[in-house]
Image (cartoon, rainbow, N blue to C red; front, side, top):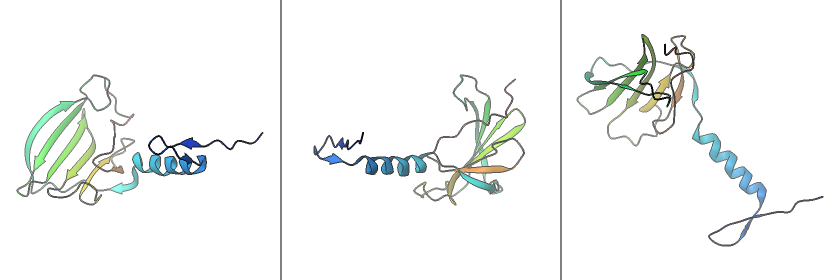
Length: 137
């Protein structure tokens, strides 16, 4: 049996071929959650001043296991560090005046397996969580 089903565009009423719909879904879904893999250096914070500290829930379980430190510099750039217990597992840099899309100026880096190497890089608008290797006990 052969399927020639098409999806209807609810705005125009026109038929959209299923292959086009599948292609658009794949292209869009790959760009949404794709962390860049590599080895990344923590941002230099020598010209930053500690601005505040707080605890937060980094994995949605209701436990504030993540200690967050926020640093600011004179230009208005901000850096965040995220640690659980004694384990530093993420850094974030947000450059003042940028549009948050340049991964050299605006990013989160994460140590995904607690080996001390920041091996994942995310855009600021991407979701990331506490690594599974963090022991919350």
